[in-house]
Image (cartoon, rainbow, N blue to C red; front, side, top):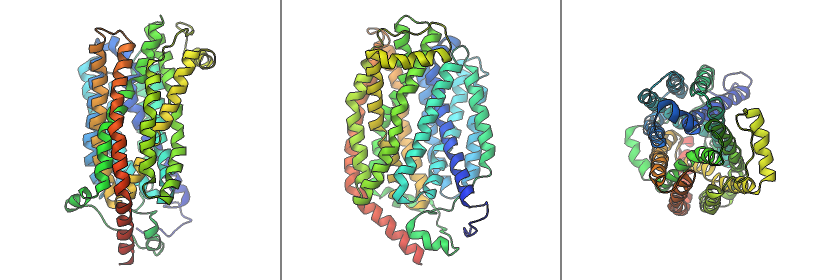
Length: 471
């Protein structure tokens, strides 16, 4: 492939922008799909006649399947047409999400959500492989912060869609999201599949001369990938971090239960609690700042990204604990009203009710600090691996992340059900979420270890690319 016709559509600036937008939206829809189930637990419990723990196991199973298949998708992304891989994966998850809105039994819903996980696995691995080729290392943290933020926005949209449109029936959120997925799978076919290493400084002259970087992964290189020391720490940190992150998927349920505990109905609790949970995610916007700071620190010190991730993860723990335990005393909303009424009432409560204000501020700070993790982890994966290895390493990392997240997601609700025998909602969930914060401690240690190995690994990648560009 030759990228020389700058004024044409294919590979030109407009085409690249179009491609990035489509990929970012797909990443958002991916996370919206995962957020649907946890954000309408009260409705699903009543509709299917199951416990919170059963719904937690369903969500955990989907996350685990997504993680397992991400390895397969990631390996294919390092050697195949990435557009068609994403198209196939999107059709799988969109189709099964749509069918989920029509089922009447828990077992059918479980099966469809697990199959959807196969398709969702393609989005996380393949789109990372593509995005990393569009971004130069000096801006990688900032760019990855926007990509990661889009996933957070997707979680926000999915949570709002489920809690509001799914308050009286579980079907509408599934149908709406499936339609969006199918639409963007069609738009995906017109995107630009950038050649690997497209924005690497060491390969700039190679591409400007009309040549290409033709290296692709094969199974013999898997041993070399495993020898990159930073990869080990970046993958291992996800096992513990994602146990804690996985538990956080139940924050909407925690706040729904808090509203119900104040005497409101199930439907009002689901809607108002969902609005609270959505507003709390505003803190994730700080990922842009921390992605930028990671870039600046990295330019001065190749361990900068690892340092900033460790600081953010460990610093967030006390604020999460405050956030879980603050009650919503004195909350005043209109029972049985709609979203248009609830939103201004919730916003008013944030500035007039000290309990609600404390919950909002602690959530903002906690999520702002943890937002340092995502963009810098993404950027480090790209920094310490050759272009043809990034999809595979990300897939492995996402698999380990998924194991941790599935465990945290499932065990939080199962544990909450057990705790509820002695501690009623919402305190059972608050205690369960608090216990899982301990998993952030070894995560910080892994980043400290990565800070010692990443400078050498980054320099090795740069030297290899320079050598290949000159050969």
